[in-house]
Image (tube, rainbow, N blue to C red; front, side, top):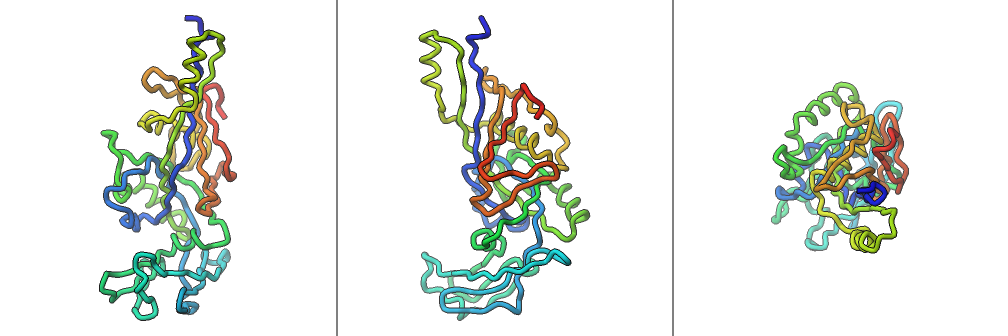
Length: 288
């Protein structure tokens, strides 16, 4: 067959849902939550609550968040509403609280319906007026070898991620490890250089179709992200985008978008800084 009639397929994926958590807090997700396809190990400034600044008001709690350590420390005052739509009768002023994981959360106890936790990282991402410096150090897939998606809380059983965590504790004692969990959706992009009526019809039928996210698509997305950021703990896929085949379709390129501004994150690695809404494009025809 004349190659000029062969379709040139490209893959476009985008982060449909994002979540961030400390590794020890992954159990806040439902045990059967398997939506995430890719996880990103990141290094962020240490966050802690200034105990002396905590004030209780009728509708909110005010406290200072200490960001960073040593010479790079800053503070930001947050007013946090904890009026819960499904628990309007909860009054935070009437219950005792304690800190968990050195001032990473405020946990109110004594309520008949159970403890109420105020997670500092989640609160800061939602309420801070500043973007959080988030350095990418490793990118991996949230899948078992069998192809089954991992529940988010089981990610820390990944041997490679455990090695990364050990290295972070050793090399970045002034920082914290946080996991950015990404759920991707995808569509197919293709162009046909032909006036043939059947091929033009095929082009219309396959124009921007939704694709069922499978392992090949996740492989292509992971490769594109690693190729772009070149995280220091990823030893493969950080030089070239690999051609990925899926049911006789050949992806010649992958375009990926993350939208970290939704969560107030400034994403970067030692190699690259990601700009909001930027398209990460990796092609089999280029090493960039």
